[in-house]
Length: 103
Image 1 (cartoon, one colour):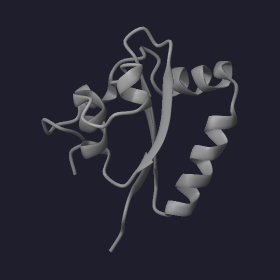
Image 2 (cartoon, rainbow, N blue to C red):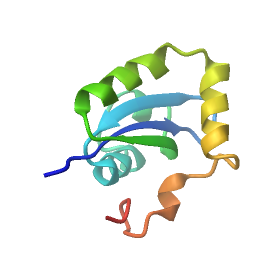
Image 3 (cartoon, rainbow, N blue to C red):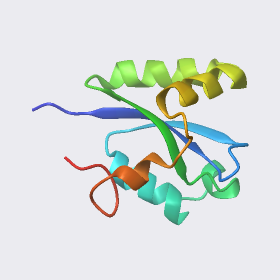
Image 4 (cartoon, rainbow, N blue to C red):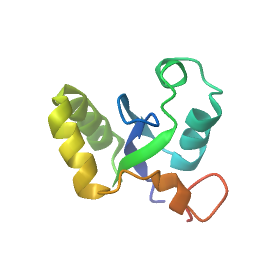
């Protein structure tokens, strides 16, 4: 069975704070960020806007990519986001189900 893993970037409304994470269920994880149901960084800084994501079939590759992105300077992260999402919109709004990506 093919499993998908996601490296994703969440932002706050004004795009001043970024959070980078890894998940195997982007629908659930984005909903958790949006609802503030998990205390921590994204809740504290209101990072509830999905601005970027990548898909992987290997969890180790996804974790390695997450670590690499976290080391990047902010300017490079902004470039990556704008290349993928020029309008910096909330990508989860394009998901077809109420909580996330369509399958």
